[in-house]
Length: 321
Length: 215
Image 1 (cartoon, rainbow over the protein chains, first blue to last red):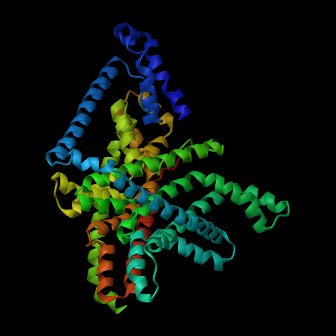
Image 2: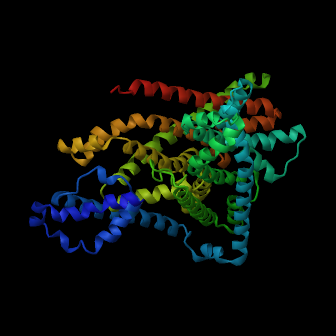
Image 3: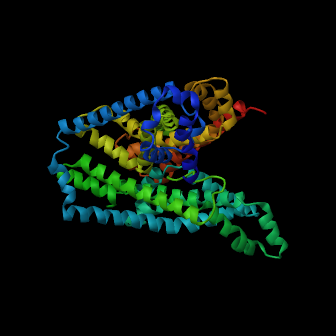
């Protein structure tokens, strides 16, 4: 974000400086107040717009002003249309929304949120080490290890999670294995996400300069020692951002509890909605919770990336999942 | 095995519906994503903020939440149309955010000198975008777009969770309930999906080789 602010600022400041424009355009009268929030908002909204167009001249500025006004009107109209559609069908009634201020309802949903967190954390706790093992397997020199690991990763990345969940849900009981709803949700998530984590780890290891391993061999370290002391610590650090965005994806996967009727956040919203006829409201509230949660995670990932002192090349490319 | 060969039609139909679902989603999401990416790099502030907010919100909502919201929520506000297209709407809106980001990073991959040269030749913003930036960025976007297409295809199975059971995963589940042979049915469906992803990957590699510009 930092460099964008620097890149954005010259644009409004340089326009009064270029002499032919200031003669015809009394623009600077509004500039002292506006740029502060405008620049900040612009920097927030985009990083690279500055390189695509010149600081606009007088006609360009008029055109941009017209487009701004027009787009504001269109956006407002869209919002108004949506609100009207809600209001006409009685979905804005306060009774339908005040439900979500009741203590019991809130506690019900928060319990769901905790269940979502449990699924996410437990799945991650299994999938991360499994993924690391698979990555080591794919990087191994022995083809008897490399091939099965590769086959597993490639297969599991190409199979939809829902298919796997159905297989667990309907396939396992016929083999006599009984799993609780929680584990029926967690195992498929672990199985698919381990494959993705493996790819992330492998990419991290492959991205490391060869000199690192060669140097550690030259120092007399064995394969496992150099992996443990040299390669993996660096690989984990480099892959931290993509690991976090995969964690966000894993959190999203936990909504499939809806399918196995495990009572996590989404499924609780469904139950609540069917009970109180607040389907739209319930799902909207849940969507908002996910947005806040995932964006907080993404923000934390950005902080982590900065803390780890990386990203000289790519500043905060994958900020959110 | 006999179960698979005698129900090839069911699998074929499921595969076809899955393909229709993914293809319509991919096209619609692509168009919407392109519009969003244009919003995000345009000089018009409200459009930029809108594009940014859209991506930030839609990317962090789980797809299943969006699907349930649209499939069960839209009728509540008086908008009823076919289940298939409702699912496509939800999925297109979701994937458009990812398309927007893929296109934007593709645009970022175009060297700034190209854009400056275009401007120096007197091209307008729209012309620079249409004649210089987008054609070049498309080349570097093939790989990300291919992985997006794979993700769209795999996640199209989620539609069966909200009632579009005609697609592959839904059909497989129905077959399994009828004949109780989970290993064969789910195995066959998995093979279908693997074949699909492999094909997409191969096609993308081919396209990339075709479009590469040797400098």
